[in-house]
Image (cartoon, rainbow, N blue to C red; front, side, top):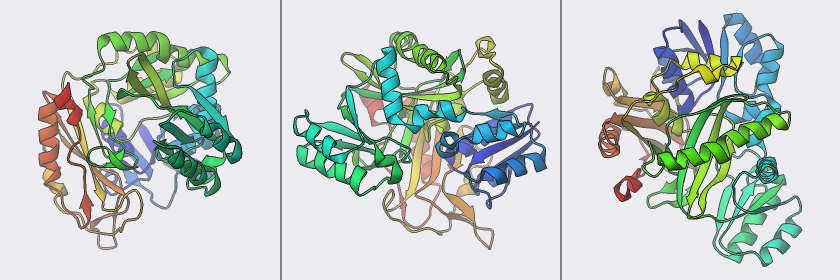
Length: 425
């Protein structure tokens, strides 16, 4: 079969690698793709993820059997609906279901309505009302831009002054664009964060192995929020007891709630959880694979990804025995110095060939391109996701950091404490 993947980051590279392993896939296409994906797929960098008409035409031209829509923006904007109207087979939630991520206010209201445990919250479309509320709010407080903001539209404010500045940043200065037209002010929760990805076919939920992301830019969880600076899987804090509780009180109720609202969800739901003293709470939903969680989860999945995708589309997921390797994986993101604020691009990357033929090692391209001379150069804030598998989390981490030294480029930056929670388990 022929598969078209929409996107051009590390998540899409990890998906492409899984597709290449499939016994059923003969040809992979990707738009726009990147320099790493181009090694295993035919890419067209002239087509963007929001070029819906061009994507549909490209899919028809290549006569693809499956379109896998990976990023959040095209999902929220209805790419799946557009492609299905063209008679194409598509993996990913339709627009009315992708709102689960597209609007934090919607998702919070959904959880409140259906009794799904989450932090207490209030929503505002007027900055003056938000400021008035914050005058009497308990600090710290979490401020979230309602819409999509590349995983960065969340501010943790420790003081009233910081909260006032946060309202200005989100709602008045529009630092996150129209995503900040509505603001969600949320109770600050403490505990261990865990990410759980799940395949969903509209009624059945099959969870993948757990993971934990590192969002802050600098060591010690300092600095601004990013799309993710590294990740490890599984989480040593996500026990079988917690998993069973979440299945009963969070995972299945979320899918059932979406169905009850007439928003059947087919695709992948990312459950961002906080393991508090009072039990697990939902921090956020994503309506797709997370990044960089995908890099440490898919490389451990035993199933043929096409079999699972088909089951999600066809509503037969209950028949799938989803299995993962009994090992661990760690991803260390190599970024451009200055990310997520300002950074330079276009630096040549060396050492990538070292990964060829290496078992248990992966180098997922996130922000790369081929220049006019055919060299792989940096083209984004997050450049590479160096990932390694090991028998234990500590072994996987040592291997990932060792492999990170195989690669070099000017203004390279990475965190040196990815997986530090492993030592505390």
